[in-house]
Picture 1 (cartoon, helix red, strand yellow):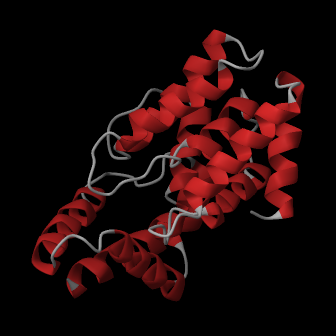
Picture 2 (cartoon, helix red, strand yellow; picture 1 turned 90 degrees about the vertical axis):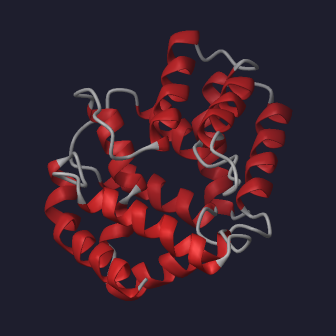
Length: 209
């Protein structure tokens, strides 16, 4: 629970959440979730990386607050043994925003963005905010090889309950599905920087399993 993230959260949420107790309690809830003992990759470090990407993105976002809220909540619920993490994370965002002056259409937008992270390979509408968010969430795939290898190890740690053969089978399917996409990244900003290296990293991991 670092000071930079605390400051970002309060700067983001204060305009529509005047109750400081609600802001603080929700931040503490999120921080506890992301720093839980079973988390290795889906931590506050991941959240910080996505928030940094917002600052670096070359195109203006249509609703930067909604995108940042989606970033904060998108992995708030994360149980590798369940398939409804995104829906539950979206519901957590709705519960928080119901206590604020954030309007219902924008709340639905935050929930929609979160829910789309369930499958990064599915077809999506032409939507710059959504495309940025999905690309930022996958930026680790195009990281330098040592960082990617650390990420792959962290994902395995999060799935520690899954026996090795089953994990390798499932992981191979995930990697192949991503490699089969025409483009991993939907925005030119991320594609130019990360696409080639991401495909190299994915193929290398696939070959190692």
